[in-house]
Length: 161
Image (cartoon, rainbow, N blue to C red; front, side, top):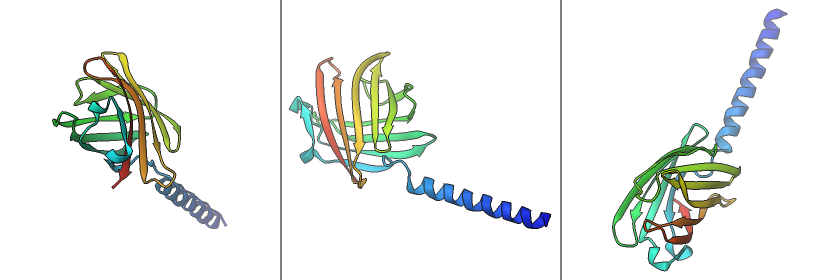
């Protein structure tokens, strides 16, 4: 009788564990993956700040993401930047940019993130990232300061690769 109870408890625990793993795998972070900039669907102000192209690669990290961003700037120079951040609103190092040195992410809902970028502790940009319900499009809207302190805005549309 005691052994039977042990087996039932073990079986229920295993079923619960497998259910939790399956739910986590299916309901994962929609930001994860490689995203390519679609310039035709994107808008940059001033237009002279429009990059020539770019990709962002997000991998999973404990309660957050690691991102590597690379492409070609408006002036034709290549860029390579990255960060690893949790979705907790705290500042995390951002490397590869002369205008930004930290980023913070806050999850709004399953598909929406708000973010803030800073330089030397001063906010230089804010934005929102929304992954479409079908998971195929990632839209980033932002208001930022460029390297010269000028106001810029953008709506960058990325497609899942």
